[in-house]
Image 1 (cartoon, rainbow, N blue to C red):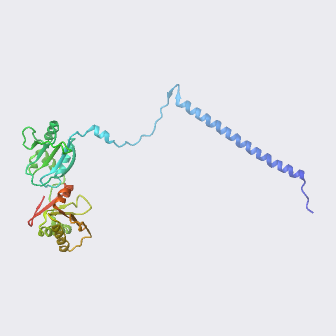
Image 2: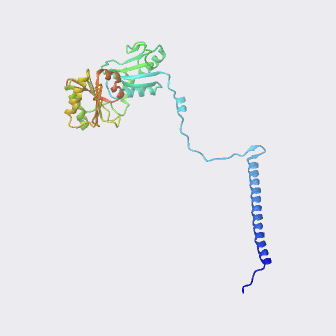
Image 3: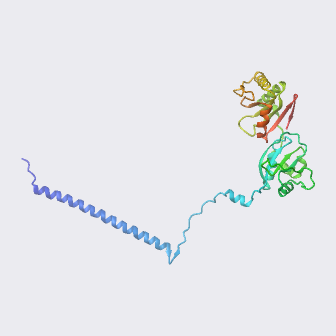
Length: 315
C-alpha cells in the first residue's frame, strides 16, 4: 500500500517554492535599481563633460556633401531684370526666336514668350517699345547692338493691351544684326531646312498638302515637329471660307490617302476637322476658327513648309 504524504510535508514544500519566488523578485528589483542608478550617473557625467566651467565642448561631426544651390541664390548672383519681352519670328527661320531668346536671357532680360509672328514676310527686324519706359528700350537695343536714337528699326509704339514692355520681331535682315549673327554662329546646331521627302511620314504630309491645295484650301502649312515632340512628326494645317469647303477638303484627303485616319474629330460641326494619321495630324479650319486659335503659333521653333499654287517654300 503506497505511503500517504503527510499534510505537514506538503506545507513545507509549498512554503519552499514561495520563498524561491520571493528571492527572484528581490533580485529583479535590485537589478532595476542598480541600472537606474547607473543611467542617472551616466547622464550626469555626460552633462558635466559637455560644459566645463560653462564652456561647451567642441563636438566634431563628419562633413556633409555640399547642398544644391537654391534658385534664390542663383537669382541674387545674376538677377533677371524687370523687362518683359516677346520675340516673334517674322522670317520663318526655324529655331531663330528660341536662339535670340537665349541671347537676351543671357543678358538678364525676361523673355516671356517666343512664337511665330502673324506672317513670315517681315523684311526688317523691329524692336518696338510698348510703354513709356525708355530705359528698357535703351538696354535691350544696346544688347542687340542697335542705336535707339538713330536706327529706324527701333520703334516707339505704345500698346497697353499687350502685357509686355517690348516686342522684337525678327525679319529677314536679322543676320545684319551683329550680336544675333555672332550668337547663332556660336550655336553648335545650325539653322537648316528639313527635306520633306526624307521619310514616309514626310511623303504622306506632302501628299495631304497637295490634296488640300487641289480643293482650294488656303494658307496650307506643313509643320515639322519630329525633333520637338513625340506626339507626331508633322502637322498639316489649312483653312477654308465655308463649312462646305471644309468638308470637301476633308473628304478629298480621306479618299486620296492610302492610309486610313485612325481618329476623326469635328466632322459633324465642320468648324475644325482633325484627321489623325499618327505620324501626320491634319487640321482643317474654317478661316474664322483658324484666326482665333492660331495653332501654328504654338510651334514657333519648328521648321515649316508653305504650299501655294503647287509651289512649296521651306522656312
